[in-house]
Image 1: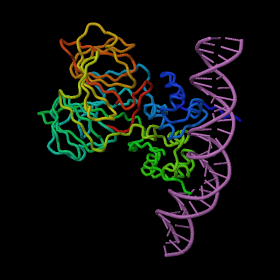
Image 2: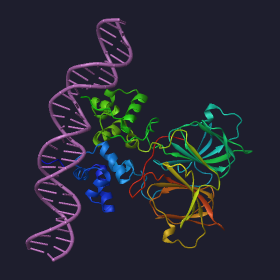
Image 3: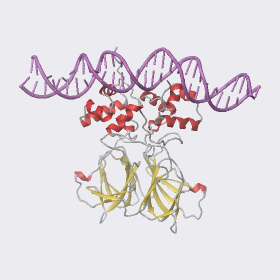
Image 4: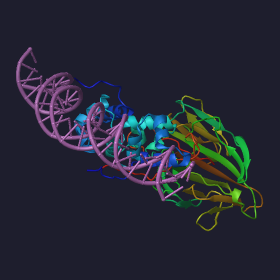
Length: 208
Length: 208
DNA sequence: AAAATTATTTTCGTTTTGGAAAATTCGCCA
DNA sequence: TGGCGAATTTTCCAAAACGAAAATAATTTT
């Protein structure tokens, strides 16, 4: 009896499209990835549910992100969407860190989470003045100078126009070094992922 | 002979952590996901390379993003890393779009790709003056005004301090409306994933 | 402590996957 | 049209994953 013809997994669909776009044959893909021609064929036709090991080889061999292969999440925003936030607008809220303005807050499911933050002048750093979260963070100093604190580094001053890219999981905080509040633009990862905790694994490719 | 003890796949590591954080037992996870207890154990211990079918059931059953399960965009940066780019610095290059300055260019494998772009004054929009790429893009106008063009919208003027979040796959471009060049800060997805064509990478947890 | 309870790992038979090679289908050209 | 080379699908078997239940290990109770 022949195999039952399921609908192709996302990996199969991606593989099919990639081959079409690049004009690759199954044999070529096989040599690139180390996955046999027959397996590739079955994957494209939905006759098999590829293992993690195989998907890994596909991803690295074809030079695409693993996420692509599982159809994982293409942007959840509809095509052509855009959201403009005028200066001074944005959904604002206050924390110990400062006065936040969330930009493009009408768009849900964003990949980026851009915020404008007014950083107050402060003498001491209360514990609550620090932030730490998963993922990376990018900060551009719109109006400085500010002092940036991040464990395990010494404080460092950032002037207007300076930027910093750092591991957001380390405790970090800002304070204005100007007469009044300073302003920074912060970009973190969007909070599309459900729960609060989890995330961050050491990228591991296993397989034997 | 007992199974050979490989290192756990990312899925295994995530599963282990999720269970620890939520206090779930293997039996509970099994009932949530429909994956047998024995398989779960083997996945956590790296004794098996889970199939796509199983990973799917894990993701939906646990209500986590598939990307988490495969270590999708866990940060590839070592713990505690940071990179400061002073105003006026950054790896610069020129395109039809304008003069680019890539920020934190010494960090590879970034999730974000921040750029400062000097936008020239121009009368006409040559085809090469447009950009289109996978994924979302966030732009903050550092020094305006600029005109933003994006299909299928009419041109719109953005002032200093305005920002826009949009679907980068639509043709888009800028031109300065000031006397001289304007400047924008652009954040796209890191180039960890964008080889050929196709979809983009996705979100993650965190918060600001 | 021992027993009882609960959680995890291992065993082992069944099902599915992965791959080499055969069979088939699909161009292409004389 | 018939034949030929290339690409894809199918066959078939070894290897691996999956799951039920047994065997351990870890906790709690008495």
